[in-house]
Amino acid sequence: TTTSRTRDTQIFDLIAKEQHRQESGIELIASENFVSPQVMEAAGSVLTNKYAEGLPGKRYYGGCEVVDEVEQVAIDRVKELFGASWANVQPHSGANANTAVFLATLKPGDTILGFDLSHGGHLTHGSPVNISGKYFRPTFYGVERETGVINYDVVEETAHREKPKMLICGASAYSRDWDYERLRAIADSVGALMLADVSHPAGLIAKGLLNDPLAYAHIVTTTTHKTLRGTRGGLIMLRNDFENTLGIKTPKGELRMMSSLLDSGVFPGTQGGPLEHIIAAKAIAFGEALTDEFYDYAVQVKANAQAMASAFVDKGYQIISGGTDNHLMLIDLRTKGGQTTNLTGKLAENTLIKADITINKNMVPFDDKSPMVTSGMRVGTAAMTTRGMKETDMVQIVTYIDEVLTNHDNEAKISTIKTEINAWMKAFPLYA
Ligand code: PLP
Image (cartoon, rainbow, N blue to C red):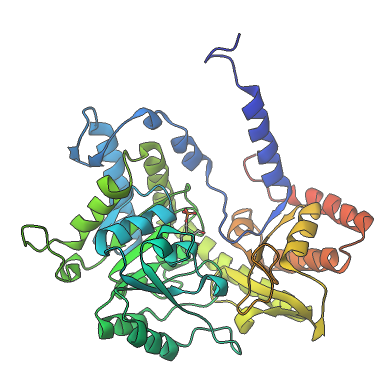
């Protein structure tokens, strides 16, 4: 009979298989990365056994002395990393962090203004299938058709027309930096709160390689597992708590600090007990991100993205907005070298995976195909930079991608490329 002491080979065999998949292929999904062994060790630690509803020093359970210290270290490190004055590290994911912010600061039916999902925005910024689009009135701004870049004059016009209670910036597939200063001015001009969701570029922001959202946004949310290279999770930050009350009052008529509203938005608003094992893993990742080594990593992520973008352009591919400021790019596959192709995002994703190259299909702005097919593919350099790859390796990856896409109906050719890639990846050991 099976007992709790019998090793569950069914699952551990699958984990080993997944590790092999991760180690032997080229990982270009822009939202993924590889955590360090110590981050994984903490995520699999005894802290998973502990209930700790509440905050350090203010818990609803006994025996929290140790996890209190762990969570406080995570908070202190992330504040130092981003120059925040307050942080809540409990959100289980980026989506949870955003939902907690909405619950804390908005009322059902309030208008929100976010970046259009079909232009690279995120589901949690007002999509009709997400709570943000069901409980609030979502309105959107997008990129310009000709440039692929956000026109802030149009954002301003839209804000004046729609009068949102919250202006949201941040994206899943936008390769350009954001003008947070301008967005804050727009938010102020309509009396809206500004939320910056920096999930994708957080690691680059932390090292000063992109504009600083905390200098302008009332509230900043992020995931911890993309360019920040931590365990899967989310967090919320503030820099200027005192100016963030915006007149939000308790039932007794007292002004409440934004930090206190947000803490309640997380727990008990949208979550129960925090995952202290994951918070420990976040703390370790924040510690790693504070090092000079991580600065070098972040610089390389950007340099690799630029090298990759140039290599795609050299082969005739069309990158939305013409290039990248961060770790990712969105490629419109409908034309190559000025000629129409028969490629779709779906075909690219399904073909590249046969050569062990993982990308994701993605809508491009003004896409004429459905979200299940799409005309684009999104690629990012965070994961392969962790593997130790440099600019020349990005050029090699683009050569492989181009060969596979050009020969998408030639199974023999794709199989040869896969063998070559599997051998090549041995030069970039991961968890050896
Ligand atoms: N916000 C943005 C901008 C994202 O890109 C993502 C994830 O891709 C999320 C939020 C959601 O994060 P999670 O998948 O951890 O809920």
